[in-house]
Amino acid sequence: MDQKFYEALNQFMEEHNPKDMDEANKLLQEFINLYNNGKIDYEASPLAKAYEILEEAKDEVNEKKRVKLVKKALEVCPECLEAKLLLAVHQDRPIKVLLDFKEALDEEKDRLKNMGWFAKEHIGHFYGIYETRPYIGGLYGLANMYANAGMISRAIDVAKEILRLNESDNTGTRYLLMGLYAYLEDINNMNKLYNKYREENLHMLVPFLVYYYKQGKYREALKYLDRIKKVNKNFVTYFEDGLESDGIPDAYSLGDMSEVEAVVFLFEFLFATVPGISELIVEDIKDYV
Image 1 (tube, helix red, strand yellow):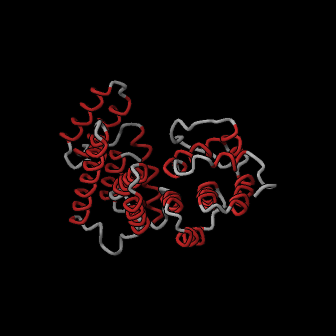
Image 2 (cartoon, one colour):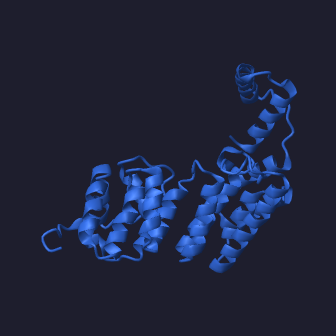
Image 3 (cartoon, one colour):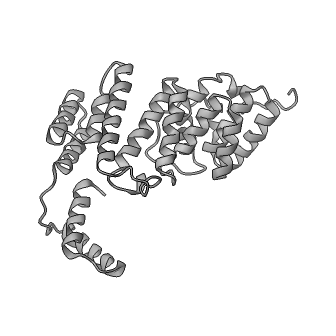
């Protein structure tokens, strides 16, 4: 749901004031039909107009033109968080990127507080609230940036804040946090996080594999490798073939190579600490450990 659609829908619902859920669902269908046929009379807000410019910027291959469009979006709506974050990452100085990225998020936090979104009843549901969802997405980006910059404690603090604000964890922050704990060899917090979610997938199991390898407990590591093979046989193939992740896939399927690529990309900071782990993954070492 884009900003323009969201705003138009809200206006439509306010004008018709549905009495119950059944009426609201009927109005929603009516609205969708009218909207798709261009029959909704609606003046887009500055934020909606800024998002339209950002869509154009994302399709622009020329970097200078892309940055120009992002700046134009900010001129139209100075409060557009996504434009601020995009502008922050379009720099050559990594520390400046981090500083500007965090500054934009701090400004957004203050704005959301002033609007009442940090009230107790909203805490834990930020991803489900349209107005606060961009902030959660931005925090997740910051946590990843901190992780890949080696700022592990900062990344953990941000990840824990995301889970506090968004308990359903639509962003998959729990997986990043598991990798961060593995980086610090913090098995107690790894076990707590695993026991909370109880997921048997690559994102949860790979950090345990790396942890036990880092501890020199190869038999324990191999037990996790066996569990990993059961959920995705492509994991070993990836390391056997010496493949490299070109970036996180737009989407991945469980058990598919795309899932492996997503995990390797997410845990790039973690795999960097164990350059020799491919030997354990691809070779049968049970006879000498």
